[in-house]
Image 1: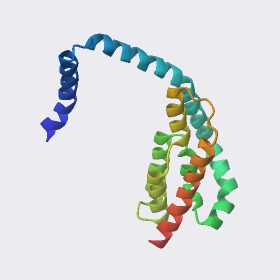
Image 2: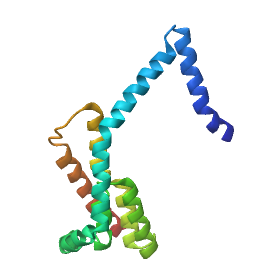
Image 3: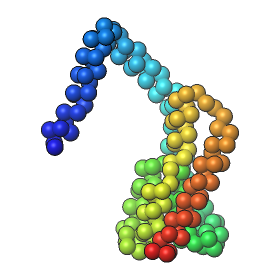
Image 4: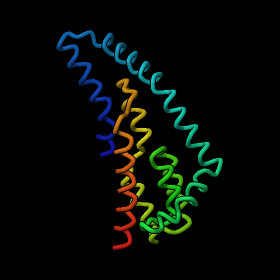
Length: 171
């Protein structure tokens, strides 16, 4: 199995090159054109990703997540979301690695078997890094107006948070 895993990428690359040679395509020239396009897309995405990274760092370092959590705690307690998972709910739409760090902190503090730990785990698995996904996918094709995408995606995130809390309370 280990051999198969390490051989998949070289065999795939060799197959593509051989297929191109059989079809009499300029394989190296096509490869260089693809690499140029990928570099241009990376350069186009870099400002949005940089802004997202700076926003997440500022939000967590300044104590903004704690402040927002305290502000939202009374409302979220009414709908069943524990206030201890609110930092995860705030960071999750912004950053996957940031939300994993918050999840790890929650699990080490409250244990994975607790209601809070289970709820945080389900939230982490059921939510999306909405702003990152929109920045990358829309940015890669040049879409600048997201129209209904962000409100719909953030609503879906909110529904997943509420459903996670309800599900974990039932189970």
